[in-house]
Image (cartoon, rainbow, N blue to C red; front, side, top):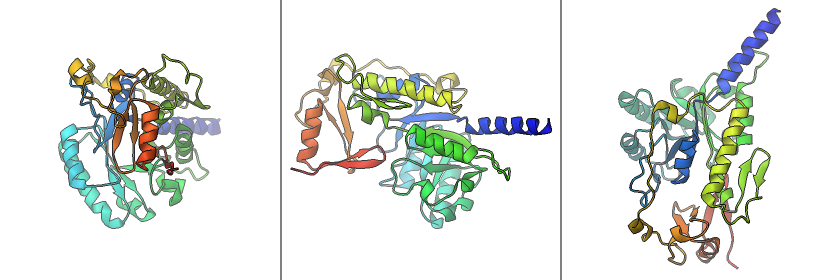
Length: 332
């Protein structure tokens, strides 16, 4: 009977450790707005914002602020944090022990004004683990990054710490969660999974595919009424069901915290100012909605159609960021 009690207690502890405080979705509007309405924590990278130039009446809270990992600038990030006041902030990637003191000092500066903010430092080498204070969340790199967490650490390194999983598809993230929280013979404490985020849904939607736990589904690709936005929203719903089914979805969502968002859509004058990068046509007047691509230069381009997107990328030899790797089509 004692064994049963201990087993039950351990299972309860694992379940609590696996349940996140937030599941974030970092993207531009209107996709970030849809994610917010479904219970995700919305946010963006410091150099992007919600890109709501056409949406002057949008008031969407910045739930999570990521750093520009390709062009890091700590002073700029701190300034952006104080400007947007997010709940979660990914301060930066610590590649060397010398980086840690600077990032911790930045965290303390932010905490002095925002004591409830969840601040994340991403270790990029094993040596920095013990140097990051326990009250600061560790960022576990699993998605698009030059150095992924599992390449230089063991699951035991993360146990007993608060962890946010950065990127990677949901099955990959779930595998990490299970590795860091499952019971061990030596009774090591589980990692406390405080958050996860993944932004790969839009990539599949551009090709008419929505995400499911069984993989990408293209059954709606040829439906005229299915827009990129509707496809992303459907994927978000499937993603929420996935995390709910595995006990990761949080008990409360941003709406429960009293955060409100209002959106009235673009005005006629705003519609006139959104030109396709490829041909100059108005991207808001296309049947399937804007087609957006982000390139390794940091540039984000909007197109009125897939044909314009593809020809512009080919013509300019652009390398596009897609999920965990870049996709490059060489010129003919």
